Image 1 (cartoon, helix red, strand yellow):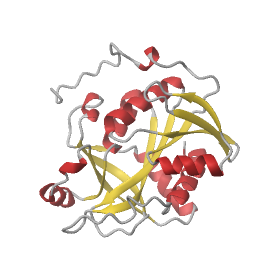
Image 2: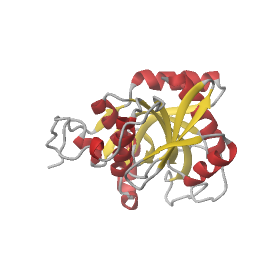
Image 3: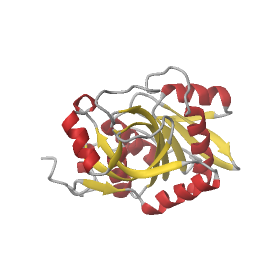
Image 4: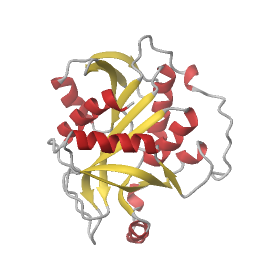
Length: 249
């Protein structure tokens, strides 16, 4: 069934049945996955809540960065929830999404390194409801190139490469990891391929970057900074995302 793509943009249930459009909603949103980043954001930045989603009643905040209003949102982990929430956000008025989060690395990449994905292996199910079947999907080259330039402008070291979007993290077997390494993947996460397919399908501008957390590059899993309750580069990633969101789109 998952290989039978239906390109009808209308569905029986849609975001308009669940949420309302938001007056003066910023066109651009920064979305991330870690609750401690949201706690830090609310403590360190002046913002206001402007909306909430119907799913899980998650709040949407607004902040002014470089003279531009930008929305900020703690999204859900995993492709199905993340895409469903972004469906609601885009119905509210969002047109541009900059997403960032932790990823596991499949090569020798230092902790907290910035990674810009250029394409994603579609090892999740959600993307197949938004795009014709394929093994991989390319991110929007225009925004990849703009992120590259923003990294250079900010003197930020970065790595570009292919990511493996896998929504079953307890099934990251050694055989699969070797296969993905052989296919050129440098990291693994859960949402990038689905978000790219969603954005293409809905006509939304989408860009994403990761910061390197745990490592699956060797025989045993190395948790590194993944489960640390302290901030380990997330403040920097948030500051970069907020600045870049005001300039990217």
